[in-house]
Image 1: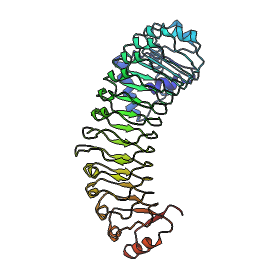
Image 2: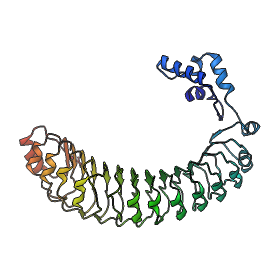
Image 3: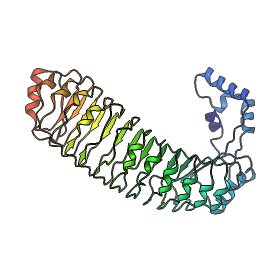
Image 4: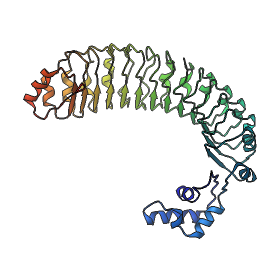
Length: 403
């Protein structure tokens, strides 16, 4: 249905919609789409229906025209459109506005009158030049979705914590140095993007964000993580890559929903966190750290499909990797590993093993009889292993990373 409206109005500079189609009209549109087995364009729909859709939309070609309809507009979305501060002040009088989205509109500030938008549920001002957010935004108490990514923000007002209904917050690609402690009382928050900022630490009470599902804090300057991270029991995806972490600092024991874990490009020297058989982690990336030893507890991660440990200082893999029956890809390249554990050759789903960069690594002959492994990467100079395995299994493939 939105596709129909969009196609019909695609020549407008922007449009603002508050559809109020009655139930019969909605069913008719759905019926047309189902019968045609494709997305209908405006030209394929009877004119009467188009007329009804148009009557129930507020369509404007300029901000001036939009101001005339300020009582009926619920959505305002602008892309690469110049907006003066006076324009923004006027927009703050749109009493029924629920969705405000400005992309690449060259804004450098938000007026304090933003507090007037009491019905606002979503605000997105991305790709502009914002250097600050007014504390008055904390009075927009119905906000659930806030996106200020790709700006020049260095601070965040603590009043943001007044938005108790907020579920989504994107502050990525800014210059933020400190996250206010008050952020931890946003108990309905499920998605938090903080990637590509200048954060050196996170609030100690971070674990209070009980509903948090997705946390991206990559490309910052974090040196450690709060122990309270171990209380984020709903966490599904965690990305803290490209920081300055020397240790993980919290337990995964209660994080049973965690699926993806990314700690690549840090300074971690050991991976010895506690795991549980209830953990559902599928992907772990610890590449490019300073890890010397991997905890035996990793054998409890029965759902693990991808394990990346490249560019570390590991000399020996932990026992029990043969328990990881779902493991599909193992990257241990550029380490100090001397021998590949035989038990890996018995895994039914393991297809890829990257071992190049481990000088003189010994590959047990059992790997030649593996029914699942499709290829192993080796150094160009390691012809001895290649020759030995080809005699046993003509279909066994080695790939040289230097060829």
